[in-house]
Image (cartoon, rainbow, N blue to C red; front, side):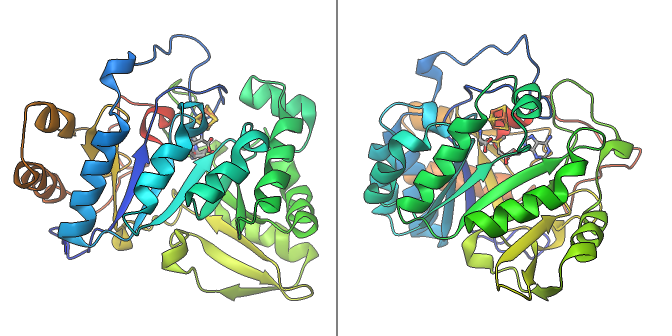
Length: 328
Ligand code: SAM
Ligand code: SF4
């Protein structure tokens, strides 16, 4: 077991497999000025597998979520999925969904267990303005393909930004109920890369629940740690049994129960989404380090895990990386 200084057992890895993305979401990364890492700087699939193996064998890590950038832009993704699935972890992926129409079946066959698909507007024009890509139809098709491939549940992540898409809460609720997906509304965090985040543009989860409750009878249900949704506050629609959730990352941080570390595409281990320092696991790997060396580097980083983020407080420091370089 890997226990941090605050008594939390760390057993969940967010694995960013590329910093590249085929979208440019306004709340996540700047339109211009993103320079992608050269290929040789990215961890290879072999390197990722080795790190995950050490985390599983030595510390009992239970879940790995693939993310990016956009994970589906990395070539031969099913090969990685197959390798990691063999290690026996709960394996999931967060994706913008635009490529799932092509590869959902293959990923499922390779051993991917669940997918979360990001979707922030159901209106084509607005979707294009937010993502800077005219691809709503591809994402909706990707969601259908994920369901058809047998992923269950399929979750839809919707980041709400005041004045941008907060008038679509009930539309998303309807979409979730109709499509059989679980929609989760996420509070916008100060990791947009453009510095446009402002506290008054965050749509508090409590407001979202109020809007949902104005139309539907809701019953609060548990989060379900093993399905990777621990931070979500979930509700059941009383009339049809479907679920909807909110993730109050800013207004009700869930740091006290955080069991996560993050690895960037170039192998930097981060003990928090908002870390301002990192541990270079790639240097250990490529410097000929042993599994013991790798484990020692992981333990040292987890040993520095702080109690929680400080968004909204005077001493909060914005990380240099944007969300697309961390992975969410
Ligand atoms: N490209 C993939 C995607 O969009 O799902 C994976 C990477 S993306 C950075 C992971 C998640 O972070 C997505 O659900 C996205 O909506 C969310 N996200 C991005 N920027 C965010 C921000 N500033 N605050 C909160 N969530 C954000
Ligand atoms: Fe790309 Fe995902 Fe960020 Fe959108 S949220 S820019 S799809 S990494």
